[in-house]
Image 1 (cartoon, helix red, strand yellow):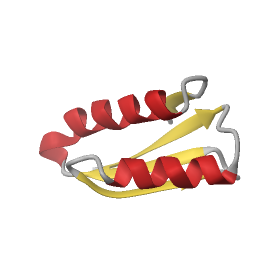
Image 2: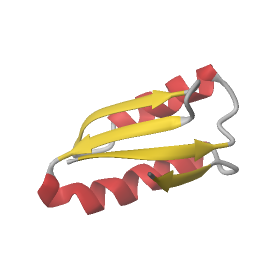
Image 3: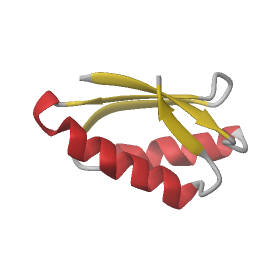
Length: 73
């Protein structure tokens, strides 16, 4: 499954890269792309475990960028 998210308040391209690398380490993530210029995150994971992976990815986002809002689009 592939899902896209809008990110509000991501501070810089370096922060986006750090976030992308951290999300890649989440078990179950098959692919992730954080686009700083577009303020978007694209997440891919297996359908069967997507809800759990999504929950863990959003937790990583909140931990690394507490002021950033991430919403599905």
